[in-house]
Length: 132
Image 1: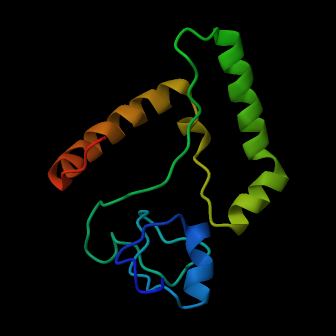
Image 2: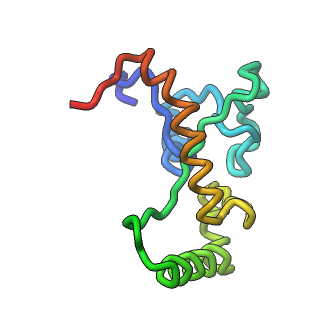
């Protein structure tokens, strides 16, 4: 990428153009499994970085104390949108893996975020990165 970036860890959809144009050398996909849009690119796990996984994820966060009916209505609308055939087709086209229904609850997200904080706290501390 113009010879100025040593390492880049984009979402798959953002990398496709660079991969096709050969402006970046790809090493591995950081999800546990291969991407359906890059089936020949081995995962880091397959290459010996056992159980390593660094995925992009999204979640919706609302202010503490948001009434439960509002939370439920937003949740249901988002799930219906994600599950619509049009959105499913587009997400598949750009290589996005949609989480399974059992991973779409408030409870799951709360536990997942806590586990991500624990997972990345050590590497962040070791890196010396700090907030300014």
